[in-house]
Image (cartoon, rainbow, N blue to C red):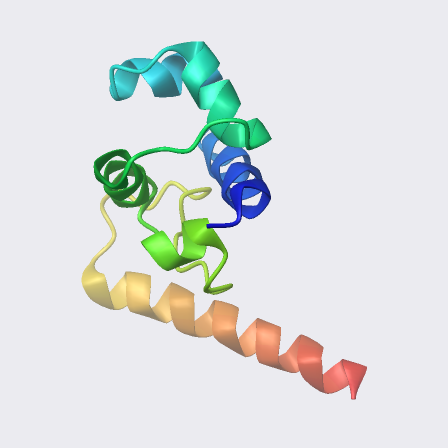
Length: 106
C-alpha cells in the first residue's frame, strides 16, 4: 500500500465532505490522532477499517490505495433525491467533459 497516496486521498475525501479529523474519527470510533496518522502515512488502517472508509466515501479500496485513479464518487455534490437515471446522466456528462478536455490537449 502506498501510505502517502492513501493519506492524500483520505484527506481529500474527508475535506470534500467538510469533516474534521475528529468528526471522521468519531464515525468510526477512532481517535483524531489515528485519522491524522492515516493521512500523514505514519499509521496504516487494518483491512476492516479500510473497507469501512471506502464504503463511507463511496470509492473503491483500490482508489484509496492508489491502484486505481478512477474516483466514481460524487461526494462533493448534494445528490439526495435524484433518481438513478439522473445520477447516471450526471456521471455521463462528467465523462463527456473530461473527454472533451483531453481532446483539447491533443
